[in-house]
Image 1 (cartoon, rainbow, N blue to C red):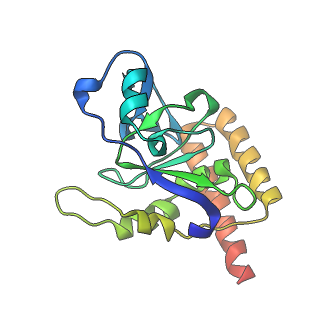
Image 2: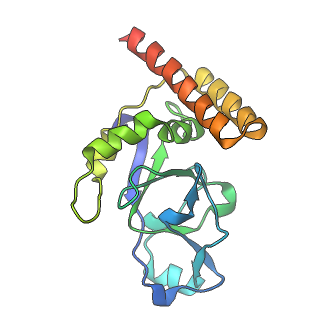
Length: 188
């Protein structure tokens, strides 16, 4: 994964006393659902607080991929243009992929597969609360077909998202990943 990303960074710890009902969305692990971010139950911080107290490293950009690394290990989400400028908490790693090698949407779909989650869960440590280190995320093995094939996979899964139930979608993601892993193993 390290060679497929431009940068990796973490979010910021914001005390709950700073939470508000409006302002800049503060994305937490519980806001990450089914590969995307839901702000239905979001908390916010004031723009002044965000500007003064939060470093740019915690500010989300369009097409970032988020991966949870404390508590719930390996949950992923794709940052859309609407959430650009939001901030995320310190238990989430923010990844900006190199789009010349890896499509962010493809990587997000891959991160929802049992193979990706299992890689991270195997590296998890901690007794009271499981966590993974940034180093473990950087060492993640990701099958990387040609960009055209990645785009075709993203298109197919996106169509299935619109047509299928969650269970059928999960089966589709698993099927695509098996196919990719088989192709990737034949290339090496």
